Amino acid sequence: MDAALSRVRRATDVSLAFGGRVHDDGVTLCHFDGGIIGPLRGARLDLGHGLGGRVAAQQRSLACHDYVRTPLITHKYDAIIRAEGLRAMAAVPVIVGRLPVAVLYAALRTAQSQMDRVLDAVTHEARVLEQELVSENAEQTWRSRARDVHAELRLLAGRLDDDELRAAMLRAAALLVDEAPDDAVPVHLTGREQDVLALLAGGLSNRAIAERLGIGVYTVKDHVKSLLAKLGASSRFEVVVHARRAGLLP
Image (cartoon, rainbow, N blue to C red; front, side, top):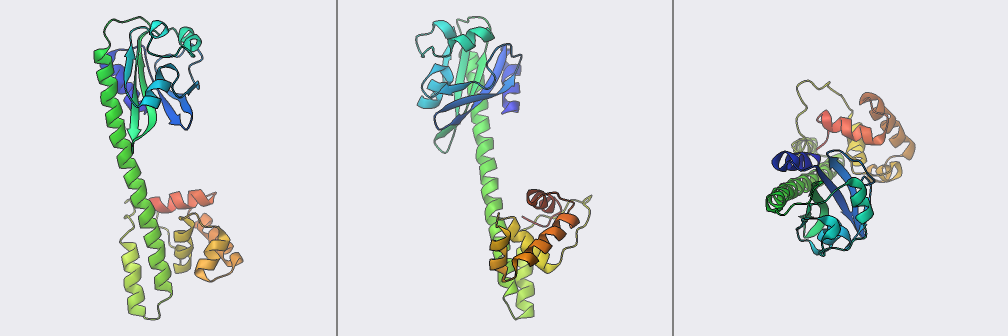
């Protein structure tokens, strides 16, 4: 969102570009490009109220030539807007999966008779941000599925008596993992450590991992400690992050 706001300011020369994240009952203003002089940062807007609240509720873009005088919105947040010295303003919803997830704003500290160019610029950046979020969500979904398949293939391989078939299954699991960068420090894990790592990446507890692998909880704890040491991590989360960077996980 920060990059989108920066592009809005460069394209329009507005005084302030800012953005809010939409939650169940309103909008929280949390991203800013430009000087903040009042209580705008962190402000929470109820759905349907103010400019952003109305835009989020109706999922429609809106511009006003003078915020504190426009009849298009409720004036629940006029005190905040006056404290910030803002007048003309445009707001556009960012919609992903038919739901508003954010609102982008562009504002000036003077009233303006024409806001079409500003509204067009904010709308363009909102559409770009929507595409970025869709792509990001798709990548996260793919990684989650690849991680689950990777773990299941390793588990199935561990149950096979046929050495050749087991090796083929492990090779198939390895195809889901990106190659480590050339400058990555090699990390050598045992087969069981790789099994524990694969399940750890899925968010399983030590007890759940023990049940899936048919080993004791304390044995799992020992493997986790070994993973922490080998990957230079201080937490289970860091283990997964460092393992992915080292080309050990999808």
